[in-house]
Image 1 (cartoon, rainbow, N blue to C red):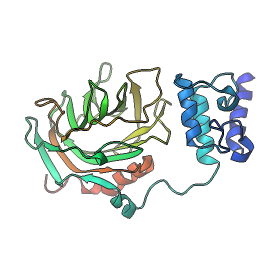
Image 2: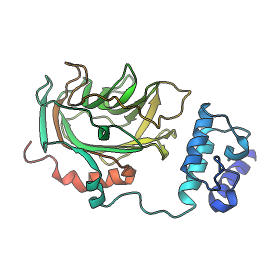
Image 3: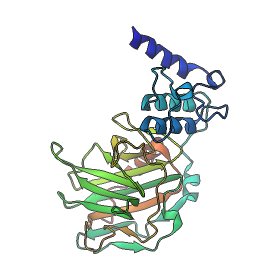
Image 4: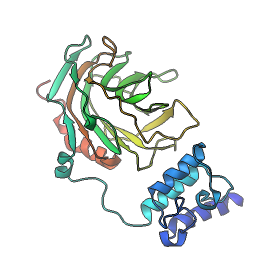
Amino acid sequence: MKTILKTVAIILLIALPVTALVGIGDVNGDGHITISDAIMALQMSAGSREPDTSTADMDRDGRVTSVDALIINKVATTAVPTPTLTPTPDDETDHIVWKSPFDVQEFDGTGKGCCQYPHKPEYDIEDEFTIRMWFRRDVFNKEQFFISNGNWKKKLGWRLMVKQTKPPYQYEQIQFDVGDGRDLNYYKTLQGITDSKWHCIVVVFNANKIYVDSKGTPTHGALILDGKADYYMARSNKKKPAISEVKPYGKEMYIGRHFCDGKFFFTGAMANIEMLDIDIGIDGGIEYYEDTKDQYPPTTA
């Protein structure tokens, strides 16, 4: 009976207009329920902010948990109609901060084909970020890097790579890592890549938005592999919430290798890598895959 009442209460909270929820859910006290309130509740659930059950305990169980953050996020994103989160193609073009100078680039696993670019602030993750690209792998059972823009000993920056999984998994995941100078978050696909076909990966990140991974964990990013957002996030410090502020590495960005010379060279091909300073969202990532999938395999590779 208690569970039923709790479920009904959650449904009513979500269904009510924002003006009816002032006080409950309005964690920062600005008179509105927004994503900022959900993020503050998430920080409370992780212990990095003092819990306030009077405003953040949405299910009224006497605690502030990630469930409360998800409820607030749901209220904030459904109570007031908002424009589509997926920009038009012209808008996206205006937000491309880096595009690979090649349509298709082959990598032989020894460093041939790898590229190095001097640091620019636009390569860093600030509030919103998207990476999208196509790739083909030729060698397996080996850790390989698509893009490296960080230092993992210092927990700085970000990287996109192929990482071998541990048993019982028998495939190799696509992994996107971010660091805030203290901790690391690891975003990993549930799908594995065990063939030499062309595949599409889209990474989205947004410090001011809450995504929910395939295990129900609140995150600030998502991975879309071949049009499917099946991913989960792991943390180097399980007591901390998802990293929202990525601390810049401030040095060279590498394509096809790790920042350390001679390590984790990519073997295969990459095509049309783009970095954007906006979050195109999961729907935008799926749309990108659907719009470009007929171009692969490319006739030049």
